[in-house]
Amino acid sequence: MDLPSTKPYLIRAIHQWCCDNGFTPYLAVAVDARTRVPREHVRDGQIVLNVDYEATGNLTIANDGITFQARFGGVAR
Image (tube, rainbow, N blue to C red; front, side, top):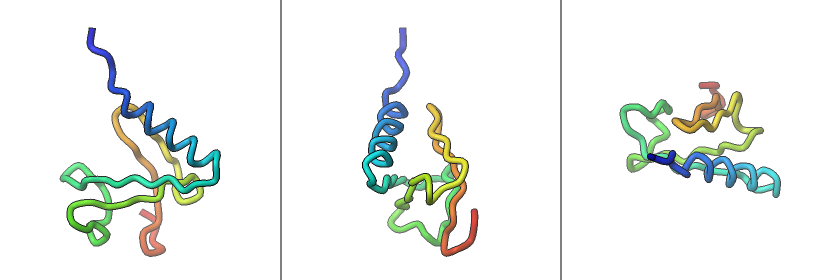
């Protein structure tokens, strides 16, 4: 039997721990063709995102991806 990856569970747990303890959770994301972020904010093939509840809208950390709405340079995306 193939077990599911532990990665999404660990990401959710660390995110919740950061928020509960007053820390800002960040994600460093390797950008590829499937990554939907403003390309002008990508540096060296990656982007660092603040994923605090106050910095995001509709944040969902699912087993198959992370989605949210955010502002980049004051513009909602």
